[in-house]
Structure formats: C-alpha cells, structure tokens
Length: 168
Image 1 (cartoon, rainbow, N blue to C red):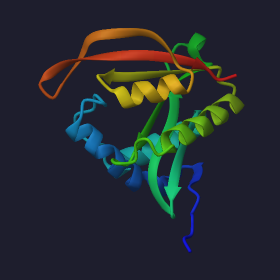
Image 2 (image 1 turned 90 degrees about the horizontal axis):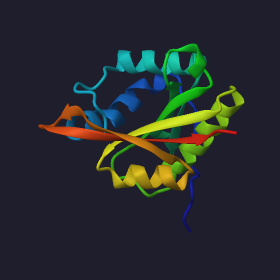
Image 3 (image 1 turned 90 degrees about the vertical axis):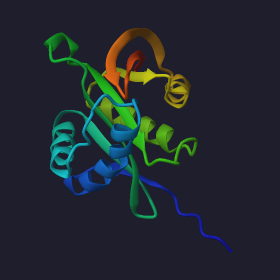
C-alpha cells in the first residue's frame, strides 16, 4: 500500500529564504532564464520575501515538508498609475517541470494577488524557453511583445517575451 502525500502551498516566510535561494541559484548560474549574474545570498532572499509579502505575495510549495518551488508577485513599475498591475515569476526545483507544481503555485498566487486588489499580471520570459511559454499560455497569458537583444548573458544577446493576463 502506498501513501500519497499532497503538496502544500503556503505563504513564504523568512525561514524559507535558504530553500528559495537554493532553488533559484542554478537558474542564475547555469541558464539565461534570469538575468541575474550572481545568485542572491540567503539574506538577500530574505529581504525579497519580506518585501513581497508586505505589498504583493510570495508563496512556496512543499513536498513532504520540503520547499520545492516558489512563486511571487512584485511591482510592475513604480509609477502610481501601474499600482494595480504586478510582475510575477515562478521557480521550481530542477527536475520538477510538468508536475503541476508551477500551475498550482501560479493559480494560488493569482488568487492572492486578486484578493489584494491587483488586476493585471505581467510575466517576462527569456527566449527560448518553451516550458515557461507553455505554462504561461496554458494559464491564460497573452503575448504583448518581445524585447529583442535586451540582455547579455552566457555569451549571447537574449530576447525577452512579455505576456499578461487579467487577475479578475
């Protein structure tokens, strides 16, 4: 007889910073998915989580009590007219794609952001990134444009595709 343990999605806390930093680090060092060059320290990740929780949201997903992914929302832009829009991202432990974790995290995040009064979510995806493009498309994001050759990482110029979806 096997036991199925459901994954738990919950608000992040400062104590999740180490796990989130560990999940994010290989994306920073080994891919062009993020334009950061140096992985954030645990202290920097703690600050990011704390800041997001004050105004937007940061969620984690646990598998058998261990954080294996996270999603967060933050300001889209600082100008006051953008205050009802936010930028969102999701990161999963490597090897967890196509498990439903990204979708579950994003759906919970969208609900939380809508509760907080946000109306539009915007996401940027470094190209090529078929997995991310597919997830965002499946969740109702619509393409709004591509910044060409906007970032230099891993020895090449990178494009970033932008998409948005309503939260209400």
